Image (cartoon, rainbow, N blue to C red; front, side, top):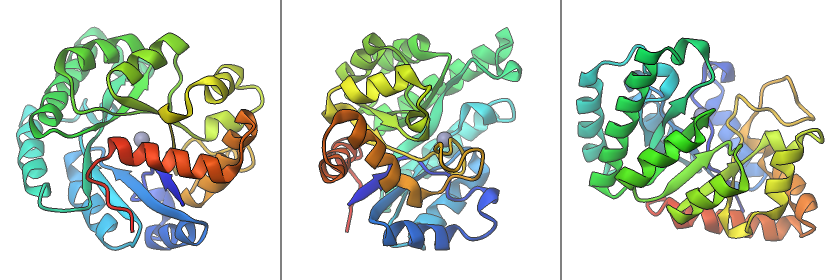
Length: 264
Ligand SMILES: [Zn+2]
């Protein structure tokens, strides 16, 4: 059994076929798909989508790309919705939250500050409810680590990990797993492939980030959660172990951080 720890299954790119995509993935052995929210407007959408498939669960949070349009009041709403969602067994984490210092519109000083404010406030919500976080980290590894170290949510996943061994160790020390997906399927991605091959297997979880980060055999087409076994097979090859071992280990790792997740 496989777990896709990060999939934007509600994205418009799936053209209303989100449920079919989840079923297709399930037929390929993907027993669980974690669907993160990106803004308050899609909170109820990800919750409903997770409930309408056998293999769905979800997270609530405000993604850094949506921070420019977010208002402080959205944080109050998030806290309320998180508290209410604790009664829902399909709710598993805070996310997607983080810092993006790559996109030009997000890197002006005022917007950096606003991102950091929203990130810290969301880390506090996670901490207050004992929840793990799904983190978006882009050109911001050390700043993300600094705030996570100060506020200490209950672990989580550094999604689409693309840092150094030292940064990987810092996340591991904070109780995080590192998400690997389509990026490691490109032979030119030497650093990411080296990390995927050499980091402790206990630190790694798999993800698609679908519809984005498509693997080499689809690129630049739309990614989908049924690609997880083939992405996992690449990890198995890089590490010289069987796909079965990768499936078991990465699923156990996902469960070890997403403690509320119930896999049938
Ligand atoms: Zn994402």
